[in-house]
Image (cartoon, rainbow, N blue to C red; front, side):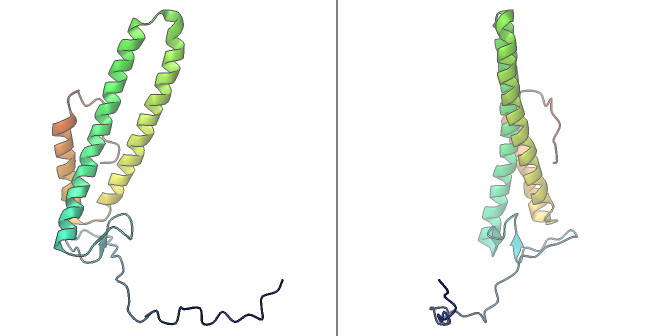
Length: 156
């Protein structure tokens, strides 16, 4: 069925004002303190003023501290897994080790993804964002470093 004869020219789109330009995300390749049109990772995560900057920086600190929580959860899982394996009969250890390896791989994948996300935050080259990442890592380490730091920070 050919629809080439139908006129779709006036389907309610004529009232849209296309003259008003939308602000563009600023992309910096050099260090800066500017926050005007600063987009964090996504175009929708945009700093538009002082309050959005404060909320953004707080969110970045929470995200970065969360990375330390994931690292700590991974370490605690490995410690619990070692205790469980020691208490098991030898013939059941191999099956439990396989399950443990899958869980450890999942923890590792989450940590890699998380660390690259934090790296992208840092790559805004914005001083305020960089400081928030550092403060978040500091807070996260204070809160979640109950065990020794056996793993290095992947990308931050």
